[in-house]
Image (cartoon, rainbow, N blue to C red):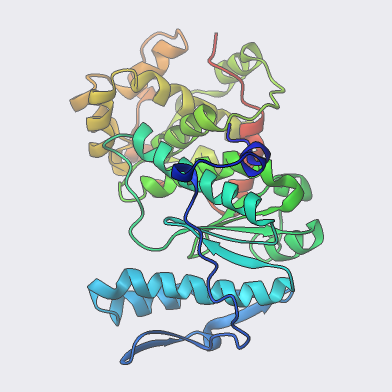
Length: 371
C-alpha cells in the first residue's frame, strides 16, 4: 500500500515528482460563470445551492450545457473549467489555509503541507495507472474531468457536507472517507483519516475506468473489489473464510441468485449485501485466471442478461453452473441469470447513496478466498 508519510518525508527523485499546479491561487472574487471562449459561457452562480455553507452545484445542468452547447473539441475543457470553478467556491467555504493543487489526472483541495499534498496527488496518479494496467484492454481513462479529492480538516465539517448526500446514513458508515457520485464524482475524507481513503479511491477509480461498458452489477463490483484488495487491502478482517462460506451456503438459492444476477442483492440491507460483494469477488477472481478470455468476456458482457451470453461465448461456461461448482452443489440451470424472473431493470453497479456506504462497511468484513 502506498505510504503517504514515507513518500512525503523522503526526498523524491526527479522522475517521481508529480507536476503540481495550484490554480487561481490569488483569486479573491469567486467566479460567477465558466467561460470557455468569448462566445461560450455558463452561468455558474445561479446553479449553486448551499448546504451547511458548502456549494452544491447542479451538475446535470453543467452536463447539459457541455453536451448541448459546447463544441465537441471544447467539451473536455469546459467540464474541467466547471470543476475548477466549483472547487474555488468550495475552497472559500472551507476557510483560510486551503489550497487547490492539480496534477495530470487529479485535483486535490486540502490544507496539507506541500510535500504531503504532492504524495497524495502521486498516489492518485499511481492508482489510475495501476487500474489501467491491471484491467488491461478493459479499463480506460474517463474522458471528462479529473479525479477530485477534498480533504476536510475536521470531522464536523466533513459530516456537515456529506449529510447533504447521505442524510439517512450513520456515522459508522462515513468513517474513513467516501466517494460521492453526485454528477461530478469526488472523494472526501478527513485529514486524520487520510490513509483510510486509499481503498475507496482504488475501488471507485475502477468503476470509473469501466463505466463505458454496459457491465452487470456483479461484474462491475467484482472488478472493483478485486482491484481494491490487490492494491489497497483493508486490514480489519472480522470474519473468517469458513464463516463467510457458511453464510454463502445458507443464503444463496434460486430467488436470491436472481437478485444477484440482476444487481438487486447489492441493494439489500442485510447480510445479502456483504455476500453479494464477496460472491462477485470470488466469481471474477476465478474467471480472470485466463485473462485473454476474460477480457473478451468483459467487453461483451451485457447487464440485460447478467452476462450470461458473453460467459457462454467467451468462457464456455454457464454462470449458474459456475456458482454451483464454486459451492460444490449439483449443477442447477435455475441458478443462472433469468431476466424473466427479475423484479426490476438490472443494475449497473457502482452503487451510490446509502448502498455505497453499506458496501464500504461490508468490504471491511471480507476475508480471503473461500475454503
